[in-house]
Structure formats: C-alpha cells, structure tokens
Amino acid sequence: QVQLEESGGGWVQPGGSLTLSCLVSGLNFDRATVGWFCQGPGKDREFVATIGWSGGRMKGRFFVSRDEAENTATLQMNDLEPEDTAVYYCAATEQGDGSGIVDPSSYDYWGQGTQVTVSS
Image (cartoon, rainbow, N blue to C red):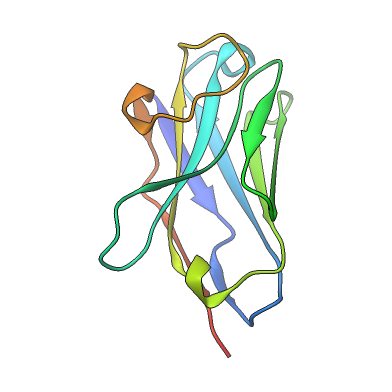
C-alpha cells in the first residue's frame, strides 16, 4: 500500500520560511517522481515543485530536494507571502523520465495535505 505523509505545515509571518516534508512508503522511491502542489481558498490546485531521480523544477522562492535513504522529499519555502496560504500536497508516481512532472493528473498517489498559513 502506497502512503504519502506530509509534515511541516503551520503558521508563519510574511517573509518567513517553512520546510515541508513528504515521507513516501510502498513504492520504489529511487525511481519515483514527487510533486508538490498547493490549493488556496477558492482556487484550483497549482503546481509548486517537482523532483525526479535526475532533476526537478520549482517556482522561484521554493526549493525541492529528495533523500533516497529516507524516502523523503522536502520543499523549502522562502520569503513567504500571504498569497502562499494554501493546503500543500505532495504526490508521487513511478512514471516519468526522472526530470520531474508538472501535470497533477500524471500522479498516481497523493498525501492528505498540510496547511500553510502566512499572515501577520
């Protein structure tokens, strides 16, 4: 059974930073692509970052990394703005070429999400 467990969400003031983690179990993490998406109030789910075994892509203030030994993908979010307030989800798939996947419909497994709130 594949499971994705996000952690690290919470409240932060504008300009602050947060680190989210996604622990993946039940699939071959070494050949998995992990994506991060967010969904703010009244908005569609949006791409944030993705990382495969050979590369990744991310939006400007965010940095994504992975640790094969820990089966974990990490999203470092910097200089956060109130507009970044959203539920953040990690997703995984064993498809892809290793460079990352932007399209959320390409992911097979999703975590429950973790709330990030940016406010003063």
